[in-house]
Structure formats: structure tokens, C-alpha cells
Image: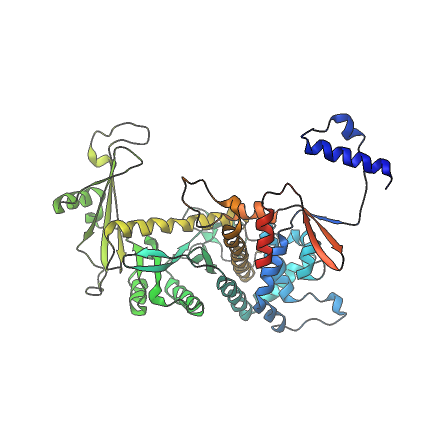
Length: 478
């Protein structure tokens, strides 16, 4: 390059440093050039590639089924198919049609090895889904990555337990797909059962839409316990939390037999003594003092323990905790004519014997984090309408989605440890986790250049990238 061009570049750089913006005339006369550097918009793929390399059990997929004959270049290893699907999900491109574009990414080629067409990816996924052992291997990969994550515990009386949240979520899949049906929210599709250990994804089980949430859940829960056993988490160190759809005799009996503490919302069914007004009368009869809500005027709570027990489980240490919420006026500020109009009640079964009623209720309110996890799966990763019409393929697809969530959760955990830009204001509590969308925007969807120089591979980021220090430290930890 000539000295004249060098002087022009130095002048532009000096103007940029001094805060001088470019004008239209300068942009019109800009010099357009090419170099041999590869541009990427997803520099954070480097994290995903390194973390997937740690999930070595995915390589077992290559030994399940024989590869077809022909030149080795025509082979697509089954492990590469699974890893490509995970990479696509992490990039919010969870459709088979995105395979060719994603597999051409230079960082993705480090995992796949060659470009893959959507037709080949769909065919390979169908073949893998027909093998029952493939589902076990993918779940083993989830556990292998979950062992690298930090399990967040909660305070339960005098102990600290790791919450194991179990909850179904409807997936809208209208159309002529296998085993779709009406879901409990009025939609049409599937209703898988999901589980999270703390904030870490554990297992998922795809189910037909019309299947009730309690059907098959005791066996699914035993499967989750096998997973936590492999993570060296004792069953007495877990706290199983579930909503009223799992309020059943068999479910709680299994938990009591295994010695697992639990907190399950009670299904009132037709019990008149669990109505809001009946619980309020019971609280006043017991002399329970109301607790005022510090954030909303005119709202108070009564929290107390009922002398009740599930039928057939008497004498096994199950407590019934009740809460009554009393509002003096509605959300529009209109005062109720009668106190009974602003009364809402709820009750829970629990085996925690050393926690006061308020602590038990707060523990269940924390169970609502499951809805955030489901929202991240459906909106942040775009995984709701499953791309295949075959049930077994969709089941394998959802299991791979849980691996992708675990990969991104690992990146988020590392970011919380080393990124000063994530720290909140002093007036706010420290975040326990980052939303998947935040992880993607800050650390995955990062533009950069891929440079091969001096026998080294470099990822060059912009000097305006505010999370560069965290990006570098996360990569070092991966």
C-alpha cells in the first residue's frame, strides 16, 4: 500500500479518536478492498465448540449404527449430526433448513467437518431417533455437561437443598404430526415433562398433548433421581417442587419411600375447606396475625399450618401449609364492597419439618422460575414448533435442545464470575443467572475476524466490544 493511502488511514483513525464523524461525501468516496481474513458474526461459537468437545460421550453415537459404503467423504458421523443440531439451536436457527448455512460457518466446521444439507440432516436424525440407545447417550451428554455447572441451592429450615423442579409445558405444534393432541392450555401439540436441577437443565420427556401430567411422572422422577445420583447429589439433599397437577398419592409415596423432601401445591378439587373465605375464617379462628405487603398497600397475607394430611399417608410427616391473600381494592384502585371479594387462598403439601409457613410459601414461589426456563426455550432459542413430524425424531430433537440450553447456561455461569459489565447497581441484588438471550447477545453473536498467522489461529474482536475481557477469560476456562 502506498504512503498516500497510509496517510489517509491515519487521518481517518485520528478523526475517529477525536470523535469526528464521517460525512456523506467521505463515505461516497470510500475505498473498497478485500483481504484474506474470514469475517464471522458468531465469534462466540468458539465457546460452544470447546464445551461440546468436553461432551465426549456424544462420540458413542458413531458406534451405534454402521455407516453406508462409498467414499469416506460421503459419510456424515452421527456425532457430527448431533453436534450440528446443538450448534444450530445455540444460534437460534433450530430448523433443518438452516443446516447448510450453519455448517458453512468456519467455527462450526471444526465440529461438523464438512457442509451438511438439510435433507441429509433430517435423514440422519430419523435414523438416530429409531435407536433407543441414542436417546440415552444424549441424556448422558446432558449429565456430563451438568456436572461442570454450579448447582444453586436454597435454604430449607436448617438445611440447604438443591431444588429439583418438575413441570410440564405445552408446545404448540398444530398440523398432522404424530401423537399431537389438545393440551391443557387449550392449544394443540405436545406437552413434554421437563426437569431442572437448580438452574441447570436435566431431562425432558416428550409426551402426547392429551396425556395428563401425572401419568408416567413417577417413573420420570425416578429417572431424574438416577441422573442426580450420577452427579453425586444425595437424594436427601434434593427438594422436589411441583404444581397441583402432580398432587397424587403415588407421586408423594415414591418421594417418601426414597427419603426425598418435597413441596407440592395442593389441588383443592372440591374441598370446600380450602376455599379462600374458609381459609380466612380458619386463620382468624387460629389467631394468625396478618402480614402487610411492603410493596402494595391494602394487601395482607395470612400464612399458617393446617391440621390435615393426604388420605393414606397419615403419620408420615406430611404438613399442609396454607396462605390467604386479602386485597382491599382491585388493580384499578376500586375498593371492594366486601372483604370476601378480595380473598384468594392456596395450600401446599410438604415434608419439610423445620421451616416456618412463610419460608415454605416463598420456596414454592421460587418454583415459578420454571416458567422462565420454558420461556427461554420457546422464545430465546425458538424451539416450540418441532421441525419433524415423527414423534421419536421430535423426542430426540428436544433432548438435544436441553444439551444446547446446558451449553449456554455454562457460558452464562462463567460470565457471571468474570464479567464486570454484568454486575448490577449496588441497589440491586446480585443476579443468580443470565437469561439465554442475554448470553447470546453478549457472548455468542459477536462479530469478529478469524485470522491464521504465525502458526496460530486468532479470533480478532473490535476494540469497541465492551465484554472483551470476559470473552477472553471465558474462552480460557473452556
